[in-house]
Amino acid sequence: MSLVRLNIKGISYSQTQNGAYALILNEVDGDRKLPIVIGAFEAQSIAIALEKEIRPPRPLTHDLFKNFADRFDIVVKQVIIHKLVDGVFYSSLICERDKIEEIIDARTSDAIALALRFDAPIFTYKNILDKAGIYLKVNPKKEDEDDDQDSILMDDLIANELEPNTPRENFKGKTLQELNTLLEEAVANEDYEKAAHIRDEISKRD
Image 1 (cartoon, rainbow, N blue to C red):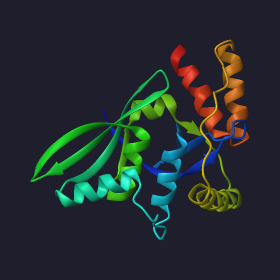
Image 2 (image 1 turned 180 degrees about the vertical axis):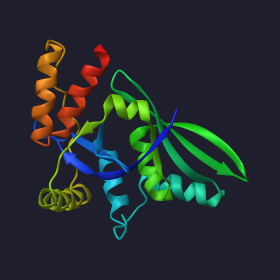
Image 3 (image 1 turned 30 degrees about the horizontal axis):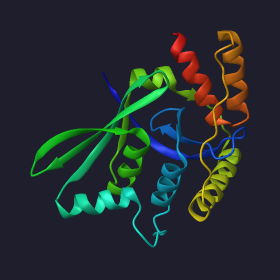
Image 4 (image 1 turned 30 degrees about the vertical axis):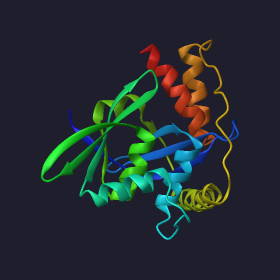
């Protein structure tokens, strides 16, 4: 199976649920986005890692892992999002010590937070992106506006104490046609967190 490299586009607010966030990964050589719902702590940790000049007064859990790994000459070489089951993404850390490579299972949000700290590339398999990727058509002006919003969001995540996630909306009673319509609306409204939940429900029925 071929690997597809991903970059981090940003972190999106849920427009329907307070305290919920979606991490937006962008296909490097394509137009698809991969939204992944993450917890508040992980959103804050990723936001801090993206803002290179921001350093918390005390190390966060992912910073502690990085310090520990540096002390014992362990390097995270890459992160691979290798499986999607019932809307849950599974990831692996490809690590190396003394030229010996090890594969360690990790939550995707943790794996990405660590990838940022190790400057490690992020990959997924093409079949996962084919199944879960979302196409977005964005004009340059709109993309610039989105980048500004991402910057504001990063500041908010760093500065504020985040609320816990609230329960997700239930889509089980919807037909596939209704789900696809809701998915298009969510993408058009840039509610990526909702789009991710709808996409996951659609994937369960395939």
